[in-house]
Image (cartoon, helix red, strand yellow):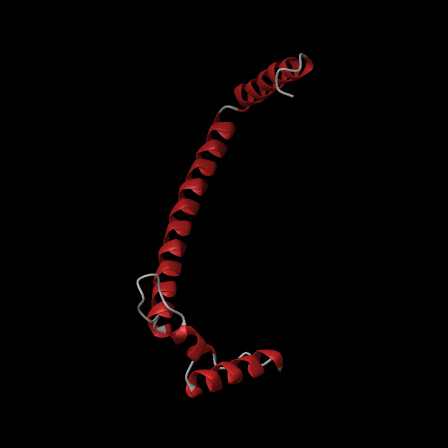
Length: 105
């Protein structure tokens, strides 16, 4: 171990002992990726933002699909209220019978 390595290790240990977390950017740059390259915090931030935007777009897409199905269900119930109630009662009866026989428990 060289003198500079020992000094660096001592400084890091003192920082950890004192509760100092140090500079976040420096710590991020010091971390190594699986392939041995340094991780650039700006690149990491950009990638996180891209993924967030992608997920946000997917969320909006799925939400609009669910709202569409919800609107269709409401329209069917409004157009055919008696059939909707009969279907709900029939489904409830069948599920109740199955649960009573402990098939769904």
